[in-house]
Length: 111
Figure 1 (cartoon, helix red, strand yellow):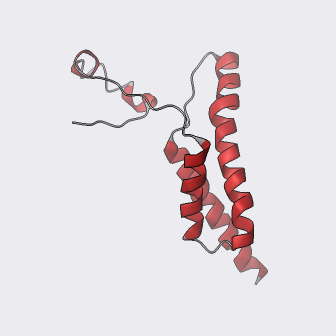
Figure 2 (tube, one colour):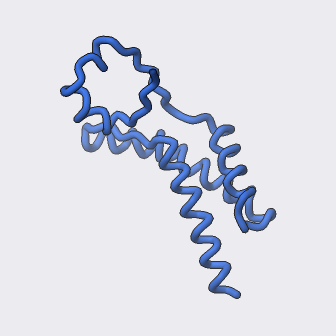
């Protein structure tokens, strides 16, 4: 049995199901490697209307932004507010979707 959840969504569940703490093993996945972020962005942009000449720059920008948020910004937030923050992979996928939507809307307005 595999349960995948973000740390924030587990907090209200754990008191109701104590066996999740005592009888389970947690395999926590932290940062996605930059190569993985870039491969996911490449796949997302291959299925979009973004022109080939803009894709490399967008892939680099998206992977750099997510890495910055996950590492530097999360540490700064943790020090300042004494709370941990996590940016799961779903956040990166949402960023890519928003980017493709913004590009499509901008291209439609220019036509």
